[in-house]
Image 1 (tube, rainbow, N blue to C red):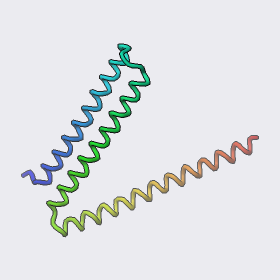
Image 2: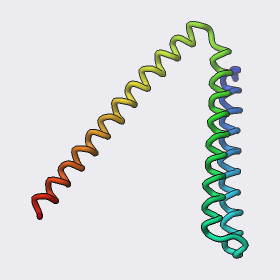
Image 3: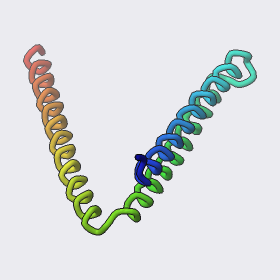
Image 4: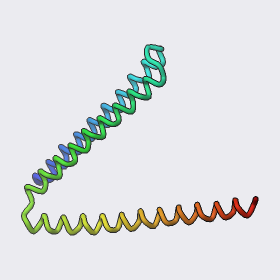
Length: 119
């Protein structure tokens, strides 16, 4: 049995798919125009970047809309459980990102020391 939440999720995923398809077809069109010489490569890059930006903005709006709809359908207890799970996930991701950043910084320092020693 499909729940209302599954329906919202499917609509959200369909929207994401439509945006990805639009971006892909837009890129193909720009590439064809560049190939035919109707626009320059730089203009094509600019069009591609603008298309990506607009797609990202639209996708972000879809995500927020789907989240709001889902949250409205939840009970207060479900919202609290979701918020706790999201908070835990965010903390884990932030810790993982901080560890990666620290590792990258340590590697940069090690490279700088090696370069200084080589000179």
